[in-house]
Length: 403
Image (tube, rainbow, N blue to C red; front, side, top):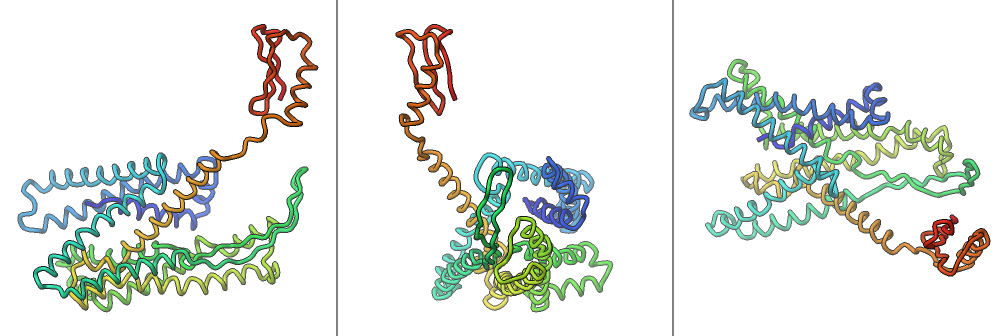
């Protein structure tokens, strides 16, 4: 019932806590710190599941005829069942991450979203056959679906590259020459996290109103004012997305830390002095965040606008935007990049040149071994395998090796 949503919410909150609290940040940077943070995330997920399942069962108890058994056994059974389902999905996602390609949790979400697409298309085809939907609208919806996906891909792939020059360095006995690199800043550095935060903030008062609205009339009126697909809801939704995009990007991409790392590695930004590096990076990030946040807000409210104007069901409106489409495209691009990297690594290992088996170095090594061996017979064979010269013979005293 809850799916993997509690784990996602807990993971995002844990990431923010690690960035905000120095003690958690220190733990994450220690040996085995990531495993400890992951363990804390699992424990917190169980707590969130219990709270949300209790809320759902309480709401279900208010529906006439929904419960056919006593309230307390039903609440306990539903809480344990829903929590166990989320824990199983969490375990399955971690197994996919460890043993497969891509992020397991993201792939589970991706599979759930993609599974809804055939049902949405089938629903529209039935509406066209019954005459409830104009065929022109059906074609427009499919065209909008393809167009929005293209825009999201273009936005996800967009980068602002800042050139960075690294001076010559001497580390030990090795001398590293000057290098030219760049800092890749995405147009939307925060991904879909601002959308998830904004939707969670708006859903929270609605859930409270469903449970306590009968006792607090003003809370019911406030929840009705924030009804999904309404104009106030869409305005607040867009503003919260922009706010969380700025907040999350400033926390994860700290210009002070980035400029500090560049200085420590002997780097400099072309045309920018070392003292003004932090100010320059802050200005660049602020210019990047605004268009990316506005794009996120527009894509996120498209389903609400479509439902309000054309009375499409939510199962059809999600094809033209929303969080589902952003997650689907983002996970697809990340998985494709990881698959390409795995193929490149496999091909490089397969076709990596092994070097000549015979040559000046091989002959010299073989002659060196022959000269060092005092006892050799007619059965002694000198071979070179994997850079090691060996003398193979039935007599163990004749066996020699030279690296």
